[in-house]
Amino acid sequence: MKIPPVKGTRDFYPAQMARRNGIIDGWKKVSIRNGFEEYDGPIFEYLTMYQIKSGQEIVEQLFSLQDRGGRELAIRPEITPTLARMVNQTINSLPRPIKWFAVPRLCRAERPQKGRLREFFQWNIDIIGENLGQADAEVIFTALDYLRMVGLTSKDIQAKISSRKLLAAVLTDIGIPPEKLDSLYAVLDKKAKLPAEAFEAVLAEQVPDRNQAKKVLDFMALDAIGQVREVAGTNETIMDAVRDVEKIFAMLEWMGVGEYCRFDPSVVRGLAYYTGMVFEVHDIAGELRAICGGGRYDNLLRDFGGPPIPATGMGMGDVVLEILLQERGLLEKQAIKPPLEYFVTFAEQLLGSDMYRLAAAIRSRGHSANFSYRQGGLSKQLKDATAQGARKCIIIGQEYVERRQLVIKDMATGVQESIDVEQFLSRLSS
Ligand code: HAM
Image (cartoon, helix red, strand yellow):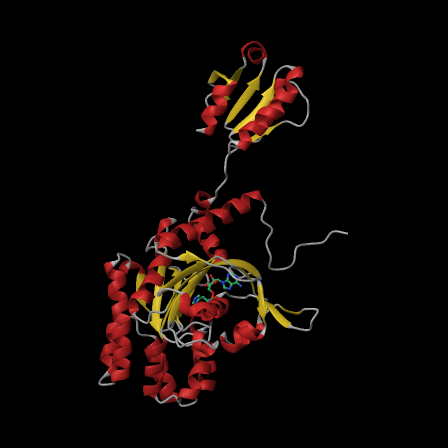
């Protein structure tokens, strides 16, 4: 019986694994150079953790299970609730701001489609304990720092930035009651994903007053923060939120990524816990789903029973990123394939045991080495070395019997050198 892989999952053969390792390596490198420390949590948590504050969409996509003790659990669809739980447990002993990153494997029971799978990897960076715009700007900068490092330019990608605080102030000014805001956010988040007419129809269900609905649409069509200033008039709550957004843009400009960033009030985000800045990075052509998304979530730690500590962060999945890198011809450059350094061969039958000894000695000095399992002639062994992409081939032959000299052949140039075995091994050690 042949069993196929589960829908929405991926097998990582060595070629795919090399790319995945390259991407994750880049995420880690950029996290560290931006001052973040790595953490991780368990792959499953109590089901209720995701029901508290992540929002309806993610709850519907949970892979849930019951353990033998009857406990309701779920495989993590995101790591932010775990982060909130972990920080709450140790908050008093952590120096602030807490700047942490993680690369969890996540599962969501979504309908698999381009850019969306049921299992994926997601780079997370979060800054906890800081309510200033500098932290928001640093999250966006770090995401862009990675995307620039792998070769994407402002012609390929754009960070669309908005603010839930600003949106709340504007919607309240329009006359939307505060208790309706959360359900309205979920609808507004669909704007870019639905045709205009379909979006207006779902908006009308939430906001039946046509005049109010028009004002919401007008606001979402603005494309510069300065335009919000013009329509805000004397509303101080709106102006306060506008100033917050302007500070974030100023810092991004100073840090040299201004050309990547644009104000876009139609970015709302699907998750329920965001309270301030929200952003997504998209491909410029707008053909793919978001490459990454995040924002400020100042109430999540408190909602998880901890102190009211502000936080901001983002998540970037590997699936959309890979599609975009592939399209731009940048994916293969990411692949990390450690080369095979040595292939050990023997030319004289009686020297077979020396081949094993030498290969083990090379490996124990931290270098990679392989050899043929089959006791074939030298030319067959050299063929194996080529097939395995070995950089250098070591031949144990007549010179070894006479003077303990090895022949080392550079497989790219064909150049050969003779070297005493002890000298060779001490060169490896140093
Ligand atoms: P999210 O918007 O749900 O946010 O996911 C962030 C990113 O993860 C997406 O932009 C996408 O790249 C990737 N992603 C999400 N779902 C899938 C999927 N089914 N298949 C492939 N990739 C996917 C969060 O998860 C927040 N917890 C991020 C965050 C961290 N906010 C603050 N801190």
